[in-house]
Length: 460
Length: 124
Ligand SMILES: Cc1cc2nc3c(=O)[nH]c(=O)nc-3n(C[C@H](O)[C@H](O)[C@H](O)COP(=O)(O)OP(=O)(O)OC[C@H]3O[C@@H](n4cnc5c(N)ncnc54)[C@H](O)[C@@H]3O)c2cc1C
Image 1: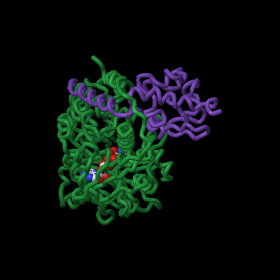
Image 2: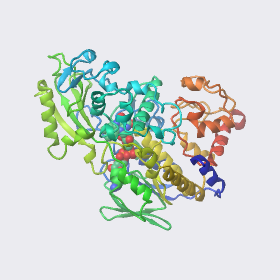
Image 3: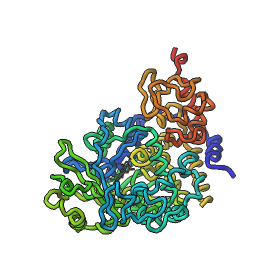
Image 4: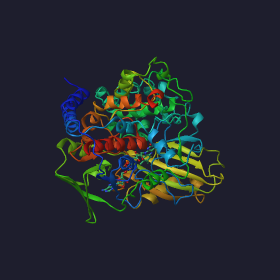
């Protein structure tokens, strides 16, 4: 049977190579996150007339710097990897200064409410792990299986070569000596599944492989010195035509000679091609005429997004100093993880409560902030009067996002990865969920680049 | 599952067949964020590719290569560059170039020609 590459080769061999048209053409891009902005920059550089339609009143999407909070903490993407070629290049080109992030303060473990200093973990009576896993810190519990990660070198994660790894992470780990207590700890702060049982092992190994490669480079991670949102802002400002803000698309209509987008406020935009970069939950709210292919519709319904709730506190006094407790925590309780880092000057601190997965269900709706603050002060009584909750971000409840990133359940990589991004005649899909080689911000830009190339071909 | 992926590939292939194709310079848009091609331009996340033809892999001064590429023994020419672009990981497992080619098969030779044309002799 032919593989995908051979099929493409066969198709291309029969293709009539047309000369590239020099005339500029109209292109629409939905979404001013990094994927949309990357696509728009490349297409504008080709001389096309690009209009970016953004539903929010700001650009950046899942890059979200909380400028109103001192220290401008990140509520979305925070870390720029040393191998993020597109992100780093854009920052250099647009003169957006980067820096190595200041280190977080040390953290301890809180298991079932019992606080354990990091160096006491292995021998703590509250450490629920057994055997060879006992000395492994909870945050690195996947370490032993990542040491011989079959995805680390070899065919890429969605080539089909790793189908055998498309099993529930609980099964794969269970077969490798992770008992119920170990699985529960992995589940507590798993960033790649709302529940570990619904998480494809392949996606965990993919993330581990990417992470391992970045670490092997031996270079520091970075962030934008004035807040990561400055990068999408600079990309937007570099476009010949700035993105149209407050432009929420509700319908996409294919026409013989182009594509028409209808906004919630009734405005219409048309162009010869469209790049749609909406995250899957936001995409579900778009009406497509004609309907998308059945395989793509099925994928759009099936793919879940990861839930993240963040509470951003401003700490005015280091309340942990009296007790000698660490400032940061990795917990298996409702608060998930607490990250603390000093503001310049060293007198105040940003503290981020980061809740993952189904634990986020506790912090829903308008009472979320109050409940999160209550939980925090119960966990850290000494913080009363010395820390305040400044902002809560609930990604799963953001209507134009619907979660932090796409999740791959067992079997879903093979079934849905390609279906999610099936190009139409004049309709092309990008966004983090369609990225193949890179994760996160770099994946978003990679996908925008790939979609821009598809548009360039289509308009050639 | 297999059948659906196969169908997806066919649909993708059909689009490739109807549409135009990228020339070498346009295809280089998939490389340009990480690699410059101008003489003397600084390395980016990837090394400068000016004059890469005939050069042994992982030998440019001022750039830190993966141990995997350093140990590869490759010399860059039409054949090795082509394989590197379409099957990076298969050619040098564990290398640091996180790349999945978005190019149509017919575009790859044009891209390679474009890169190979950036040579001191070709300038004169
Ligand atoms: C909490 C958190 C932490 C993260 N940490 C990291 C990290 O450390 N490193 C990293 O690399 N990545 C990280 N990421 C991931 C990274 O932020 C994303 O992968 C990337 O920003 C996604 O870009 P995108 O363009 O694909 O999507 P988005 O940024 O979501 O952009 C899509 C855009 O479409 C707009 N939109 C939606 N619906 C409509 C509509 N109907 N009409 C018009 N516009 C619409 C949205 O408003 C949005 O601006 C993190 C994400 C989160 C949430």
